[in-house]
Image 1 (tube, rainbow, N blue to C red):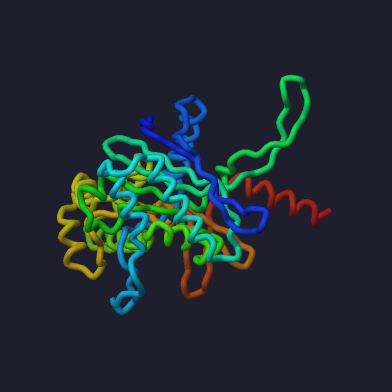
Image 2: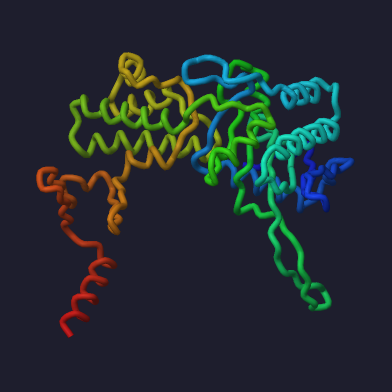
Length: 349
């Protein structure tokens, strides 16, 4: 489904000749063009499909014991509020955001800067502000005269310092803990956190923890029902397919919806089951496909061995003996069998 772009702009935060970070601000939004539309649409697609996102909100950071861990960084939120209220223009708001990012980056020795892209757009029934610090990647282009020359392009494949604010949810429910989503950096929390700090965002919902709790609740629920093995797997598949569809559309998982999916399979009261248990599931949260995939598949890697198989095969084609710590596979996959036969034949020679 297409997105409707309202405004987008790019500022830069880079090191100057003196080694200090400096902001170079654009004086007007990006002109409407096919290239700009394609860029925002591709960023939206990549971000929506990206696994392992975190979710948070504006507020005061909290320690594990519930006490404040510091003061709230409210400058970004205040500027955002002023822009939404019409007290700041879009360019002025984004310029303030760029200066806040430069100020935060200057605290770290590793900071190199990049292109700060801010895009305001709508998708389905939600308004979003997309915020991304994108690095440039050198490449080579060919001119109309068949000459080659160096150039830089935005490295969209390495989209790590990225967040998206659901402006619709933020306005409708300021107490929500998940109206800001962000990519969890793989390079370490220190590098990822500065991007959240410049916005004053703190993590609210642990989506992976919620998805693990959901998976356990489903396993426990189908295990207590009077279902045969095939019917139990059908229930797991129905939950997974529902969650996958929510991911595709960018929507959250609803426990009530899952209860409806299971009710269609003849199982009632899943909602009550989760409420009575110790799962600590909230009513609505983002789906994590990598976690929920375990409803359909078993997979593991270790000691140089990787193994995965559909859950329906456990106890049939795949036999597990916990006492002997062994797994027996009946019916070796043809491509694996070919490799085994080739290796066996080479040894026989």
